[in-house]
Length: 366
Image 1: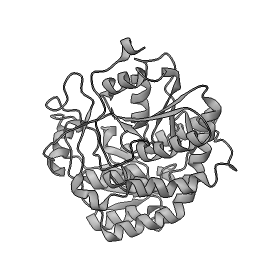
Image 2: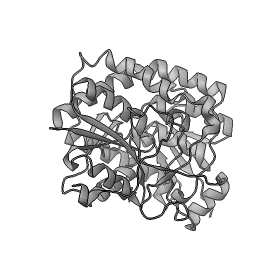
Image 3: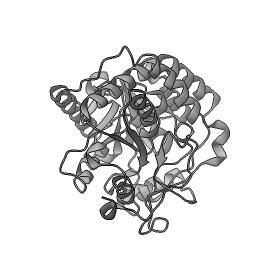
Image 4: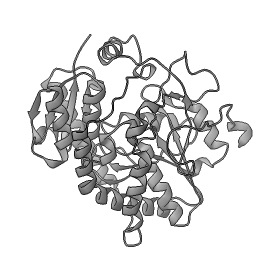
């Protein structure tokens, strides 16, 4: 196995997580951030792929962190219980060693909790973080590194949520290069019905979805730029050390671990049936199609459904408007704060966007 899959790259010390929690298969680089407007125009014009550029990340405001604390108080116990159920389901479904491969970066905090839970259940478990990029695929060098050390049948991919399913579909396509088996993707929330295993199809406020690098080990989104990533390199990232004083990555997973470990002995494994997945897939597709029709959108990549994706789109992109289920929904408090703070128009349309609670539409700029 090592002769076939051994990679040139080796993991470097990266991020702010404890080494025993995750091995991040990324190359640390320095790159000049691109301002949001320039980046948006470059993406939509087709001059640059989104993965070639990175935007600077800012420290969250005190008001926003107060909203995060409220989200933790209400959503933390749910995330803990659902993580426990998913860990039990993975242990029940996967024979032999288990290798969690978290999709950078949103999958990593959840992956750490799953790894700890599966280890607590007495199983051999490894945990890696690797890059996957829409239209480009998974990081082949990172996959080669993993497969030189762990059997392909042990792999379970981890993300925190699904949006439209673009990354899930990319993963399914990419994994065919390594196995005849379908890729197994586990998430907390799967409103679009694309995951192998999920705790639910609810679009709910997963606390870690509110923040960027400060809850993800201080690493940026993954970067695939030929000027920075050469043959034998992992996909790249920036480490935002300037935000170290705002970093809660370790305290978040340690706090959440208390919620997981206290309930795992009494929880039952999650079940995510084909019928449930199909129903969510149909409803999600209808919601996205409605937004595209309502706004005469021809590029589906401008539609960012789900609370977490809608939030990220406001923080990192140039939003035109946001569809919400209700401006007074407690699950949307942080999103509404950003909407108000940035002056983004919103439209209340609960039935049309279901199963999503929020959908951000990116402004057409080119």
